[in-house]
Length: 634
Ligand code: COA
Ligand code: AMP
Image 1 (spheres, rainbow, N blue to C red):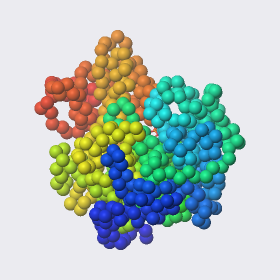
Image 2 (image 1 turned 180 degrees about the vertical axis):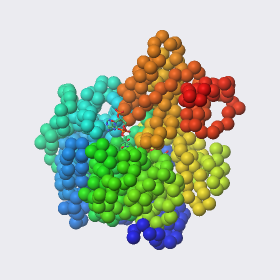
Image 3 (image 1 turned 120 degrees about the vertical axis):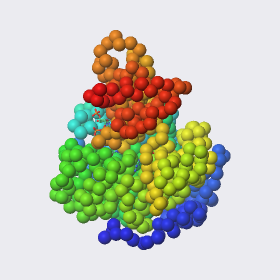
Image 4 (image 1 turned 30 degrees about the vertical axis):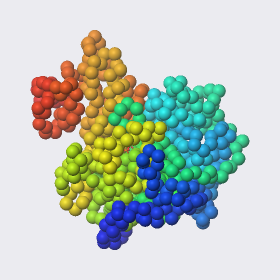
């Protein structure tokens, strides 16, 4: 059986090799890809002093993902299964069909002036045209920036101003279970708010009845294709950007994580084999969204570069139509490795704790279930293992890395699973746990998760147009190391346990959000004098945000103000922020120097034991806050 322990000691050998001899290790991995020109150097430093992979190499990521396979025996293999329970649509595209469609979309974008180095923002639901537009950008050497559909116009505007796209590609609507969400009016609002204006907005009309506004700069997606010729792949430098993906930082302004072409392709190809343990021709399914890094790496680029078949799923784990939908997809497309977020499994378990739906499907193709995006509680992991009878592998990574950093590399050696741990460092990541003073933490001692530089290929080389923020946010806290922003510890067997973010980032249903950003929105309410937004534990979504507000006057009913605050976050950041609870408090606990004690607030909200900090300005506030969360204890 594939999940038996195998190749004893192989992981250790490979891992050590990747750390002691990265140039040799990654140089060999790069040879698996079809370069237009081989790199001059495997690892080098750029003018900013940042590490870069495969300098001098010429490559095209769309070529690797499509054309290469068409030319090498996979033309008639399915590249992508599209499954949309919300529209009751199923489609499949062979590698040849996908290459043809993508090269025509690239021709259409070219006619709109898009060329190598230009940026294109994609704000689309989970439809084939979205993934094909990403690949079309890659084909032209243009840089795409996909924005998740659950973000509001204000967030989209921030990204437009930072990425400065020549073109925005959108669709008329997304579908949230049974609700049609009109995208085009949101794009119009975003462009109205942004300083930068794109030359064109390309609209794919799904004809589902959503309001479609029209502007002079709009171009219909199908019309664009009518006049378009197919175009070939533009060779780009390995170090040229493939995409910018914005993620929440600890300020109100999202960070544009930059991804290069060559290093990313090498890393993804390596991960399909060594982590996800699939073979070319197998079906791999990442049940995520193209708006997140998981979608970029493991719906689009990873499986296709590797010659696998990918699944694009427009639905949710439940309610589309029920908790059997994931198992149906596995059965129908013979998925061999699947990736999802623990929240999705918790949602399914809630509806089908006995696993009746699973038992009705043929899941014999499935070898592994991978979980990431947020902490996985042991109960969820164990339930899944019992029900599916395959290894369930919790692994850890970030938008910044672009591919797993900690995982059981089952393609190399299937290590025993330790529930609660995300296993061991992936090849290439010299991961350490440091104390705040930069010294190494002891075994089992909680500290900060860092990676000794250089990061392996595929990880962010810098932030889009912001080298200083890259240095300040990741490199200066511990010189010589990349700081992940997560806390964790290592046990005596070298297994790592992640304890959570040490900054103001929270993970809501596997979606990364910034509480600082929410605080900026909440504090803009006229009657809010002060506020704190914290992430509190939630049974389904792992964490949800909660706002504590201090009012400057109580001229109106409190529930009205709370409702307005909820609405403000929804319309400024988007429904994905999921801020539903607002508590009014008399004051917030602060240090003597005036800093709000968010950690203390979180501990009170989650009912954890805590020590009253000696730095608190007035300990009585703790009782006031407790009364808000647990009024019945009063
Ligand atoms: N476009 C527009 N709105 C969106 C959206 C999108 N692409 N994605 C989410 N939203 C909206 C939802 O409709 C919901 O709005 P509501 O407050 O009006 O109901 C809100 O954003 C929160 O969405 P979500 O987090 O998906 O919660 P949910 O209650 O609709 O569904 C789950 C609950 C558990 C089914 C869902 O969270 C889920 O599938 N989680 C798995 C997450 C996942 O796979 N993450 C990938 C990261 S690796
Ligand atoms: P994102 O950049 O959206 O992928 O979010 C990355 C963050 O999600 C990490 O920094 C972690 O805080 C969290 N995360 C991702 N995977 C895991 C995991 N397996 N266990 C615990 N936290 C995780």
